[in-house]
Length: 99
Image (cartoon, rainbow, N blue to C red; front, top):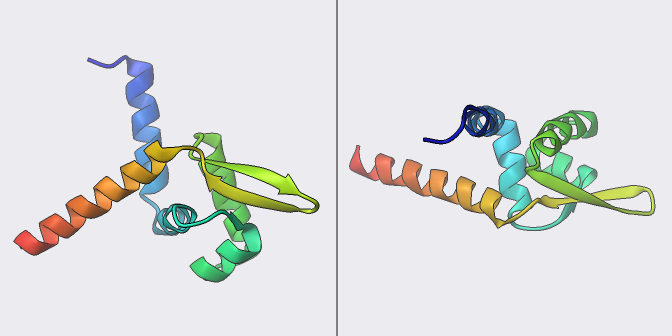
């Protein structure tokens, strides 16, 4: 059995990813490194709203960024995040086919 701390961290990750906006941001970042402006355009929300969502995703170590001049470019922190979303999407599509 995982420790209580590990279980709490897992549930925190699922809570963060349960939001459709954050899930779209993570899916977008699984395709390319993007700045906040590009993410805002892709997701269809304001730059400040994207920044807020990225702050939450960063707090759990799901995304990271690098600065280039005034711009910050975001990527997924590692392949595990992409795999987690990919597995969830594959499972959802599998369930839809069975229904």
